[in-house]
Image (cartoon, rainbow over all chains, first blue to last red; front, side):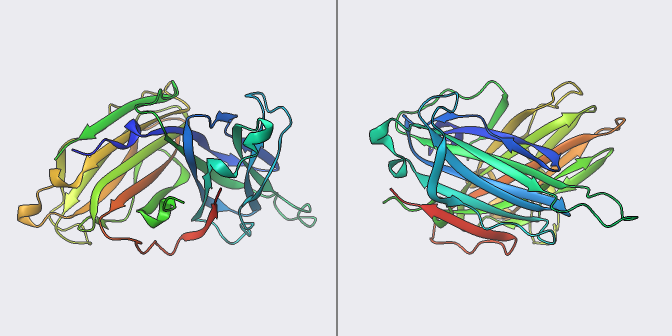
Length: 154
Length: 145
């Protein structure tokens, strides 16, 4: 049997939620034991624009936070609901030499200008994300919110 | 550089949405080219129960759909907000000898006041690469080191 998926990846999420004029973040994740990070950004119904990007920092509180070149999605337009996209990051692309060993995913729902007078307010975007760090040393410790892992072997 | 993730996996989703007293499902997915399937069920705010399971069928239309022994999660209760769970399935566990090589994830929310915010990612690890991704997969950004 191959190793099950969660034995090789630390899995973190941004919870599914309706987001309007706000940013949801994953929290800062240590990459010291990871060779890569795969992030899947999943958009449901939306009537606003959605952006997503990864940033790097030197501590788990986001110290010195800065962008990672190229680690951003093309903006989802208001009519691009029910689509998804990914950012696949090799850990070696971080500014490790300067201590940047933490990453965070952020998703921003941008309502833009107010609706014209008499028009209803924007509803927002249904968003969620899955973040998977591929580990050097397995099995990793999973977050406490990871309630259950069911494994069915063949 | 290692192969990037979507070069080795086909990725499907159940979109994030509020569900109350209803079930939402993924497409039926062919696993003939997959060695395993990893389904992550993500639950946000909820005031009701949430169940999830993977079923198998003989055709993409869901023909002869039936359960896979053990391929379901323990029910989320109405106070299990902001948690997630997974079902990791080796495709050899399917009833392949009888033609069952399509799978579907379903998530069912009980009858609450508001319901449950749910979503899912379904990842098939492929035998032959790179796979073709669903058209809803809008963009793959790869940042190499």
